[in-house]
Length: 56
Ligand code: SF4
Image 1: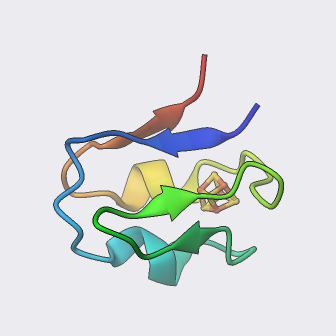
Image 2 (image 1 turned 135 degrees about the vertical axis):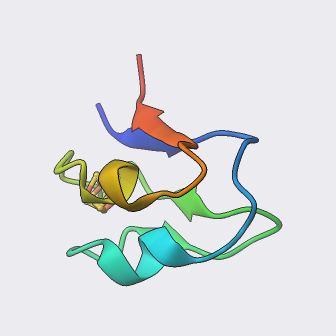
């Protein structure tokens, strides 16, 4: 399992600075590499748009 960024992302970049493993990269919206994410939840807590949640 990994965290996933939804279309609610407004590309503010807050999560990228918070991720301890550098799993988040910039695109049209931000994306999380599931192979690098350690499921810590830091990004979800930091996201002002509530766009990040654990993948089902
Ligand atoms: Fe990075 Fe943690 Fe978010 Fe995974 S859950 S992308 S490791 S901040």
